[in-house]
Image (cartoon, rainbow, N blue to C red):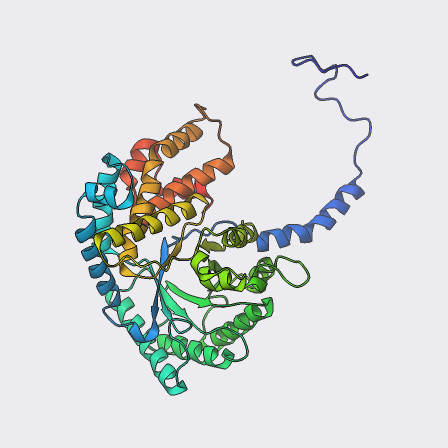
Length: 435
């Protein structure tokens, strides 16, 4: 029986003694030759977190309902619902079924300011399910009109930070129509002053990685013809079919789709209702917190980890309208779902109605404010190497700084209060987060 090792026992060897047998130069060279292509592939596939802001939500508006005043109208309607049904911190606490405390008072003020200043962070003009099949001439005209409105909004500063379109999918019956809408939209934007920095395209109902490759080839062609830098145009992949999660051979196909995007994929968006229906979930039970949804999103999360591709949860179709009781019930549902997503590292989701915006921001702001003091204390201790109650590692420091940065980006917290608590400025926070 071997003897137990005594902690602190002296090792009977000189630290600088040369080993009696060493690895040969040939073996070391063989290892480098073996792993060099692996190193290159890992670097390409897993570049890490992008150094840009991620919106907390995406608002989908049917193309025919989109106009120059859409963002302003959504903000006005959201603010009216907020003032009517949650005009004070106490009323907001009642609406959400949470404690009325100092945190909620601060959240209430910040939500109201957000609805006035920037009600929508990411807007998608929808030419797919929300728009439906139309005569070609009608959709052609709508694609051109949408692009001109986007260009005008970007020029006058009224556009959300992120804006773009969702075309029809790459399935055979609607493929040509989707491609036509995309080329009209991009071409009109280019002619009207160029592609905006916050341009986002969404590819829905992907069932095979080759459909992702097809969009890549189209965008490559457009960039060459337009004289744009290669890779200028990225896109989101909407995960709303079972084939996007599990292929016929048992492989997790969402990872293949990220690879097929060849570095252009910016996000994976979960489609609550299409995916649930594809799994046979009855309409009454189709929800973001259904076990089928959790499985799909867990697969998405692992596939996207480290790739720089961000995640978005889906939506609820319960609209906050009607009596105060009905609005409050819908708000409690939405607030709880958003909180659940945030805790599961899904920092973005869909909003389908202006009255969803108050609870989106209430949930998001509370999430970042309630953990701010602890996160900042741990960051300060990590930077100072002072330890504290928790011994954090570099990976945890990345998560802590990422948490703080997300709060800063959406307006939940202010840089001055973060710097006061941590001694860190934005540049150092970005560095700790790997941005």
